[in-house]
Amino acid sequence: MEESSRNSYRSILKGTSIFGGMQVFLILINLVRGKFVAMFLGPEGMGISSLFNATTNTVVKASSLGLNLAIVKEVAAENESGKAFGGLLRIISRLVSLTALLGCAICVLLARYLSEWTFGTDDYAWQFVALGMMVFLTIVYNGKSSVLQGLHEVKRLSKASIVGALTGLFAGVPLYYFFGTKGIVPAMILFAAVNLI
Image (cartoon, rainbow, N blue to C red; front, side, top):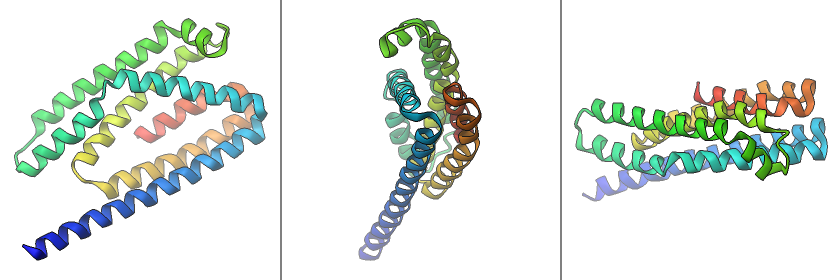
C-alpha cells in the first residue's frame, strides 16, 4: 500500500514537472513572438494583435461551453475503469465539432458587430470572418488536448504543444515581416492550424 502511494506521488510529481516546464517554455515562446510583433509591427500592430487575440479567445471560451473540463473528467473516468471507450471518443468528436462550428459561425455571422465592438469601426469585419477558421481550429485543438489530458498523456501533450508553438513561431514571424499588420490574421490562423496538426 505504501509503495503504491509512493509511486502515485512520483507519477504526479513527474507529470507536474513536465507540464510546468512546458508552460514555462510556452511563455518564453510567447515573449519571443511578442518581441517580433513589436519589432515588425510597432505599437499599432501590437494593439491590433492584442485586440484580435482577446476577442477570439472570448469567442473560443463562449463557444466551447465548458466542454473541455467535462472531456478530461469523462475520459479519465473511462480510462481508469479499463473499458474500451471508442463510443465516448466518437461522442466527444461530434460535440467538439459542433462547438467548433458554433464558434466559427459566431465569427462569420457577427463579424461586423465584433469589429465595431472591438475597434469602434466595421473596417475589420473581413478579418473576423477569416478568424472564424482560427476559432474552429483552436476549439478542435482544445478538444484533442483535453482527451490527452484525460488519458494522462502528459509527455505527448507537452511535445505537441512545444513543437506546435515553435513551428508556429517560425512560420508566423515571416508573415509579420513581409506583410506588416496585414499578416496578423494569417499568422493567427497558421498558428492554430500548426498547433492542431
